[in-house]
Image (tube, rainbow, N blue to C red; front, side, top):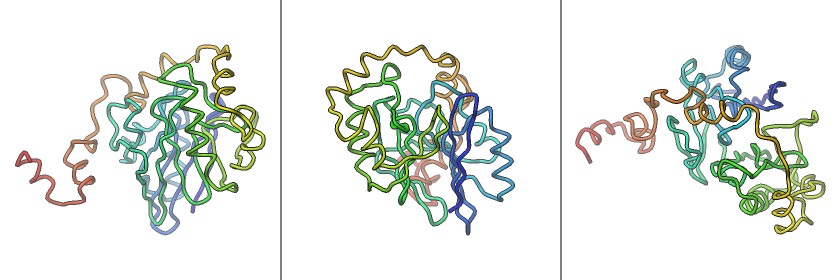
Length: 261
């Protein structure tokens, strides 16, 4: 598999480009608008065809590039059904799969940081968004966050994976790039194996975190795939002809819609 971990220094955000070496189909996870030209250049240099721009959640610290990747490369935007995003091409439920070439990612619902968080899992790797960070986790004090829900999500849906599973977060502020399930169970001061749900909830309630600097800009934009309020719906989104065809896998979907069935 083609794999690139990409970093935005302004927001300490990671994006991940995954591709199939034979078919050249690819996905990009958590693209950042400020790095759009870098990412477009890389996709083209590697001669990839971007099938999906995936979001682990609606970000509060940066504007996503997913909508612009759709405009530039005809990629489809895919997010959790519970994210609140208005113009996605595909709304993901827990257990859905995203395929690119011979590879696929399982979408696992991991709410708690936000109500619409998804972790994307493949053989031996998981992309955890902000649900689980290296030696930490996302905050739970806005966007439908809930400490109790986050604890249960991470422990049952991420840290239950095989111990050698490599975990790639959406952020790191200390230059770290990857961790494993075994490491986080042993060393994570919030969610490690010895940490109880009650202690985690108490810890998260006691955090005195600053209001995200770009939240008032980022969240409204990201609810429309980074394009901002008023952006048109996707022509390939749920309920569209193309969307119904993809869901049904049938070439006569246009006839079905036209018949009002």
